[in-house]
Length: 216
Length: 224
Ligand SMILES: Nc1ncnc2c1ncn2[C@@H]1O[C@H](COP(=O)(O)OP(=O)(O)O)[C@@H](O)[C@H]1O
Ligand SMILES: [Mg+2]
Image 1 (cartoon, chains in turn green, purple):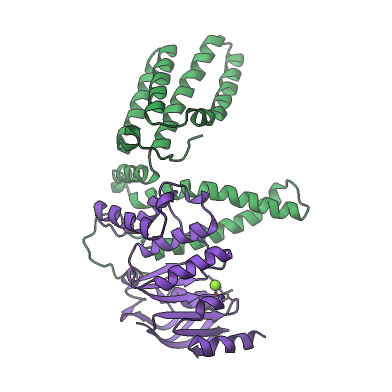
Image 2 (cartoon, helix red, strand yellow):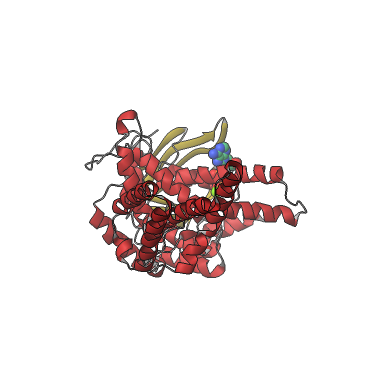
């Protein structure tokens, strides 16, 4: 549901990642604090304004909301059936969360992963005293985002290869070759990271040109 | 110059390279050999991605065992499959990755990324997700991601194996124009023709070494 960065020349795209994420946090708190319909309305309004300002294709962005809205409807629908709430209340709750999801989607669509990663690296940096390696955490975040579509490709590939040989829809048969592929990819990836100068032992602190001479 | 002195390498207790001594000083060097002959192992030894079980590998007299990081700054490495080399979702961000790992200042990173985008014809893909690119474009990006780091040597491990004819030509053209010392593991005998030197590996031993005009026919003969 949270789309990948979509480049446009806009003010919103140029805003620092920290401002957008902070804004999202703030609006979320306000929306949850305001009484029902007003919160949803406010968030929806901000979302619509941001959508236009960011010059994003409205149809495509709203289409991304379809799945979460269906899920929310099911969730709140069941809840109101079980707990016996009124339908207005349910509709307002759905609208409120849908508006927040729209805002979150807008943040991811207008922020480059690298900028998001830099921000998280800084945030994780606050956790350094308890042994968190911010550079490593940030890289993990970037890799996750990069490899999700790749994983989808792998699943399709394995499935196709199996279908070609007459195996249909068998989770177990999918799992093993997929695992092998993922492990091989992880192996290659580790080597590639190292080859491009990424050092896992590096704590992410600024370094002033000195060369660390201990490897392995 | 990259120098190997009595290099032996084993995975566990299975030796795959046997007592190799080599001085690699030519500008274009090819490593040929059948599957499993030890080509990738040799290539990875050259930039310290792996260190030899015994013997030493030195790049401009830096020992890969003790100066791994400095060696990798000097020696770039391009793998066969671009998918596992591209770290960031979009082209521009991925080009910046290695530069960021070096902790270069932001404006220098931006300048070098812009230069690479233009030089390698990636400008129009700048903000595109890498996974939407074709195999050839992805390999071009993977190569650019290494070249942007400005290495003195570049090692390629089967860079054209997964590519179609047109993209293969593109990569070969790119290699041809590189000012760096280039060492290529390949099955692509066309690429090797105008190289200065070609080594042939068989079961972890060098069985031919010299100008491609001599070693390539020897290699083909051995295959047949
Ligand atoms: N990480 C590894 N662990 C164990 N054995 C390996 C590893 N990498 C390669 N080998 C083995 O070493 C031999 C040489 O492999 P490699 O250098 O990849 O050859 P080539 O690139 O010429 O195909 C092969 O028999 C291969 O199975
Ligand atoms: Mg190989």
